Figure 1 (cartoon, one colour):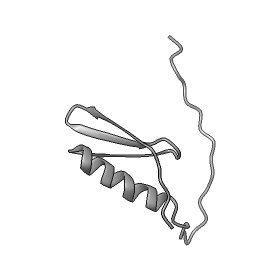
Figure 2 (tube, helix red, strand yellow):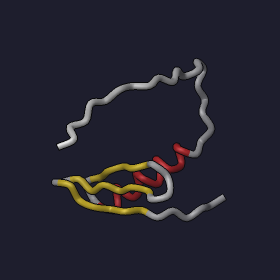
Figure 3 (tube, rainbow, N blue to C red):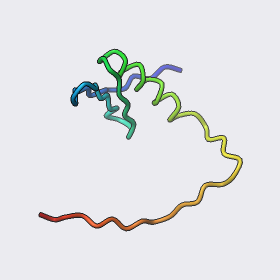
Length: 68
């Protein structure tokens, strides 16, 4: 099955960042094309069923943010 997603691409220094707008997945590459190829692979992996042999633990963490 093929599904279409929207990607936002921008450059930070020498890296191109590609982020999927529909799911919380991003990737990078040295060219825009490489970033999009890597994003495609990352989205495919995102939708693969998990294959964990040990159940993951879910933990809450506290992060102090500077409200300045």
